[in-house]
Length: 205
Image (cartoon, rainbow, N blue to C red; front, side):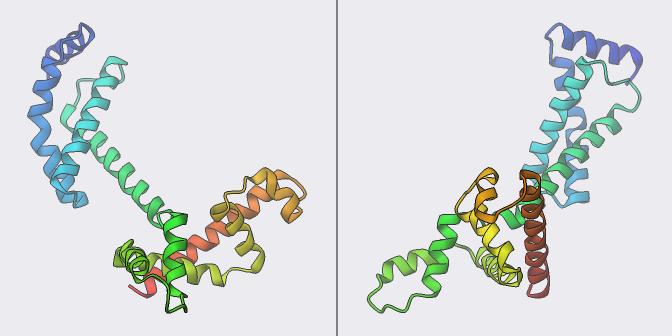
């Protein structure tokens, strides 16, 4: 993009005219979408969404005078790549946390220990179908990982995750000296749990 073309883009956006931005969007869309699909194995729809997010961010940065006219395609591609990485990192962070849908998890686990023959089979079937095979594997990983923790960590995570007790109320129950100690202890226990869950999933894939 020449300096003149870039100046036209900036002044157009500043005046509320998005046509040059729209033309730029169409010009680089296929390249960026193909790049994301090839480099990150994105589905086509996901790549299209990420590219749109990147172009919106690019537009905002142009308006804030954070963009020069040098290598616009490379600049837009870099934004799209960063947006894609953010999504992937978010997915990784939720890999462990998505098993903490407390009601569903407790219901499923309860069915695994039912000894009463009179227990409603329809409820059993519903509970069994509430999770995919992959989700059940994650739950089994969570159960195994929790059993590996020391009793205090088990109790602390049960109190915070299952019972939903706030840190401030843990001071009395667990006799922490202050809030920072409670927060640090909880963080260490959760990180240990997540590490054990990952270990289980890696070993039993």
